[in-house]
Image 1 (cartoon, rainbow, N blue to C red):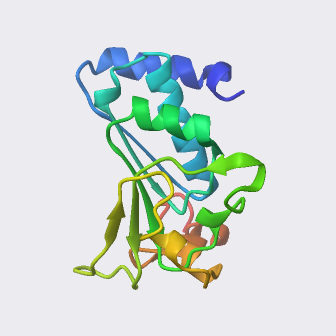
Image 2 (cartoon, rainbow, N blue to C red; image 1 turned 180 degrees about the horizontal axis):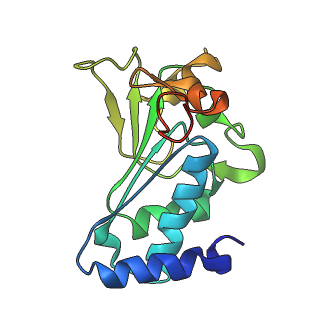
Length: 165
């Protein structure tokens, strides 16, 4: 509803005012799922060339089925799902439940994500060498990406939003 309620028009206005700009689409958690759908929709409807779309998500749950994942993989050449250590949300819904399936590519940090930490990249939809390699899943890792605690949004964004002091 957001898309048809004005977001598409706003997107087209900005796109037309800035021809040649690369569009970066990102989000965390449910926002990551929405970002995935938005990027795939924009590419599928040919609103801009798919090579002008960069999708990076954080803690993204499984969004669609294998057909959706394959469509996203085909349409979007630059897509990364970043997963922190034992974050449980990227494993929801559980693999195989009602055919939910991830699109590629996963970047998995099996550490605290501090500067200089290593990661593993799995350029497949469901890589068993990335976060699917562990069953030790916890909710705490979902709230902390690159040493930024995402729980700040629940606390009014104090210190982040100049209008909320």
